Image 1 (tube, one colour):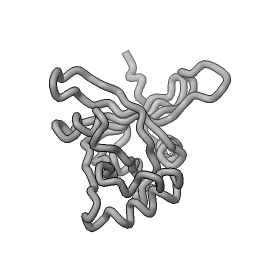
Image 2 (cartoon, one colour):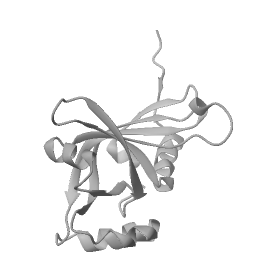
Image 3 (cartoon, helix red, strand yellow):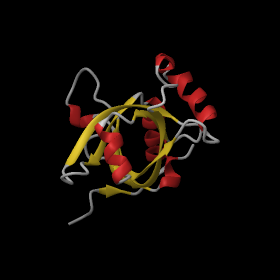
Length: 160
């Protein structure tokens, strides 16, 4: 049987990069620290200065507690449009580890200012002590560019 995974080309790279740059939220998959059962949470996402996803999370959330216990996670970006079959719309699944950027750390102020350029309403709570920025160290990426358009990408393929 022929593999359904296509050769990664510039068009696939550009689509994956645009899914990240256009994202304002995503589905974050983590493991519950008490049961190891999978959990999925919707989180706010913006493209970071490096072009990779950047998020803002509260220590009060279940997904933050899960990531502190085990930083391995997956993040899905891309939403279907208002019409048509949802499976024909592109989406990007990222695997990696989450890294918390706390208040007072060297990169926090710069990343917080960047986050606010994309999510200005977060100004209401970005300074709260329980909020941290979240960087994703990507290890693998899987692009479904629409029906029959599957690609495996490297972390380098995601960089602009």
